[in-house]
Length: 219
Image (cartoon, rainbow, N blue to C red):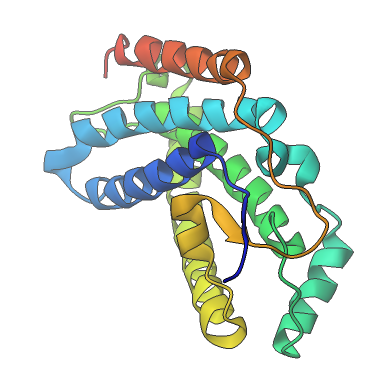
């Protein structure tokens, strides 16, 4: 029986699946006038979630920290080329391509949230920061918001295809690992350490505070 190693901590897994649910809901609600109010509320929840992940990237366990990411673009390019040559080496944390995807998605989500809060539908709903910017800025923010939404949907599609490729081509099941947090033993790389409660609170409390503050703002 293959020995399993703890890799993804519960906070990271909770973030991942919460992000999936919120992202799907925001795509659907963003296209419906009847759900627009809930679109903003979901954005508030997502804002707190993203702040938590940014903090957890410094305070979290080994494979949740940003320091574990492989962010050399050339390494990511070479890694992707090797995939198309059916060359794949399993690893515990994010791959070079996956590492860049993490940073790109977090950056796009931050821009998406900020531009959404500055936007208006010119009918009923306006973001909580709409009154703080000029009409031209709000209009530009709305345009950027739409462009990034399409770009993120494209990247999510690429991510899903990559998950399928890893499973079918390389028998590397990424989804179960993000559910139970464990991966097969690979060698000498260490398992993650346990979650530190003080560090967890240092990440989750500011996120809860931001979420609460956003819900106090009018829309």
